[in-house]
Length: 233
Image (cartoon, rainbow, N blue to C red; front, side, top):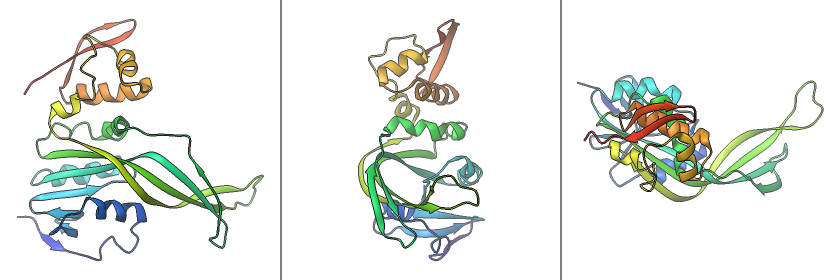
């Protein structure tokens, strides 16, 4: 038996605005927040489903997920910044500037975070939801003893809008990251071209899909490893 105790104050005093807003966005009536399950505190409990929202690296979360997945279905929500507004404030907290970041994330960028969870992706109790969002990143000046220029640090991030989302559960969901028009066998260079993403993104996709058995290696050429889709039910 696992201990399930509602703890509405655990983890909320220092909760960041982005994390809190994402929890609110995905919440449904009847959800319980900040619930202790054994030695862990879970963001949201929805009946038998445990929901975690991770706004940073997923690597520190792996141990927690491994433990929870032994007895529960777990849904992990990962936000990706499609649009980022950078707001700068002075020491007094007044806004002194605002600009749009030239970087634009895509849903496929979620595979950057999935590489550290590759051993869990084939678990039938585990699902991933990638959210494509607009985030406002608030930066403030940071002074150092020996500084030649003013540096900045992130004070907080705020959710502005959710543009889109996609859920990965079964191997076929992850395999949808490979365009159906891509002929086999293919390399990560071919995958990068087909998805219009950098090759490093294609390499992460192929790595995750190979580890979970959704892609199979057929051979290795000078151009790279060649893959085929592997439907194993």
